[in-house]
Image: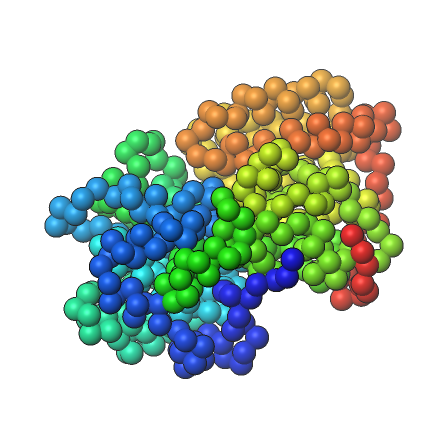
Length: 436
């Protein structure tokens, strides 16, 4: 299976982020086609394409749009979720850096299709470089008539506001994002009502991920059959995979959904020389750990789910045999403990208990009771919080115990970690080519 540079096709061009370069590659042709037809026709094209949300859940985009109630003459909003912060996922920020106009064109198409005139892009405040480029791109688009009161002389108004968040992982959850956007503390809301009915400022709101929005111009420009020519029947299209860890060339790899890890590792130059794959995560730290026996499963939503994990944000983290599973899981749980908003008791207290137990085990002070406590605590967290942070925190813990129970036992018997942390140090620039 070959790579498919669609969203990333202009990344290598000089000053790819400018309007001139974007237009030279056919930029804003999709928006022009969308404005020439009825909004319902645009929604139908997106439905026929089978585009699924690229932010983690993989929910059909057109179905999500369909939850909006009939237009009552009041305000409705589109919010582009650019608060990327999942450990292992780093696709949205490079996309915004290299092709901000692709995102703006997609946002304009989505706004027109859903009857929205006001778009908000919620960006992580730490990525100041992306913030500056987006602001400049918005100015360029307005000056050319791609945004504003009369978009491409269609009479349709679309205004885009860029909002910088304060760096909270929880604000990647759509209802917490909306609370933050309104000026309140970023915490998940009780649902129902759902954002489509009562979202930003208590008005109907669509929330889509950056990559989802960026996929729309291609569908409008080249058609649904073109989009469905990649991927699988249930998971069609192209997607960005963030490949990191013990590979020779970590980075962003755009490929059809259904590509295998073996093929991704090959594209990334192979494993670091002299080492073999031990475990990996298909969807960042919120997905269950998989092993070398899963090298050839198709990376689509259905196949990964059947294998006992989730595709999520496609944050593919690759680890070789020098990596301690307990140490890796402990670091991930430390992250979730720090980023829990504290609103739900199972998540707030449970992530602390998980972190403490994992630290004891890693440092050689753990007991069999600590391993049992990890399992029971995960059972107490799962399904008992308002958002997916609590559930996500349990994924690597449970799957690591199931698939690497002997390694946990080794920590208990040996009174500490059997791995030398110095062996896990790795500089990709010093690597050659290896094999999976």
